[in-house]
Length: 107
Ligand code: FES
Image 1 (cartoon, protein in one colour):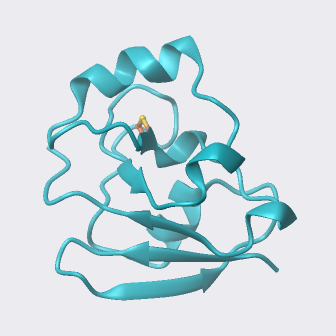
Image 2 (spheres, rainbow, N blue to C red):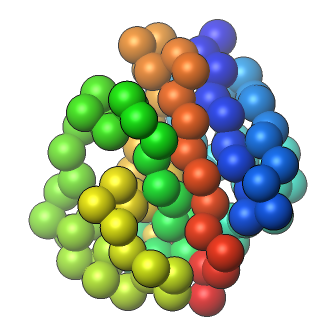
């Protein structure tokens, strides 16, 4: 199973095995990670699943949809070039090693 590493706001890194087809958000929520809220449950309506995708993974991801780009305007923390909404990131075998960092706050 692909491994995804999440870096919490306090710098702690947590690596999870995530089944292909699951979202980066859902695995983090199930594991009870603290840096994510995901208030809308993945419906692209809250922007509280914001993450920063670490190099070199950004280029490996599907580009954000127009709706994701619109919702990224509502993130609570600083929006950066590598900002994505983790509910829109689907894990697949090629993403083994994906690393995302959660911002200091989600709301
Ligand atoms: Fe609400 Fe991602 S969980 S936009």
